[in-house]
Image (cartoon, rainbow, N blue to C red; front, side, top):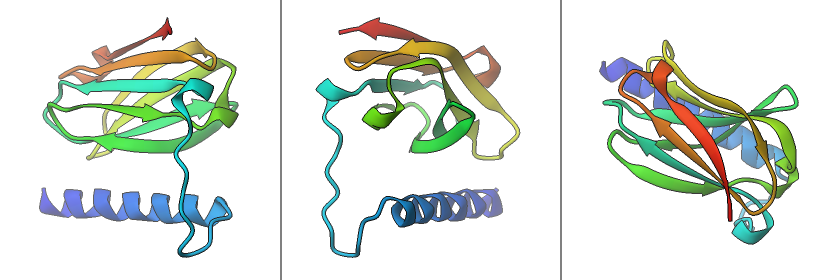
Length: 132
């Protein structure tokens, strides 16, 4: 179990390092969070007993957007360049990599909130869009 957590942590660090390398940021630069009014927000509730990696899939590309611990709720502002999208998927991947929670396809535009509930049985998870 400890080995799984270590592998999950290493994979997360590698993903975040790759994202920084591709963003054009230099060391010491200050990253500016996207403005929620010009984007969409993913509100996630994790009802499962394990940490889950969160990803957005659109136009055939998967992007890491964050992670969520068991029993927690969080909100993540999406990169505005992903929107609008008629086929956006929210994916939660369990730490062991064997289970997935998938919500979508979702039609999302700027100003929307995506509610993503990760159930105890990940395959029963659901997502829906609310206009603000």
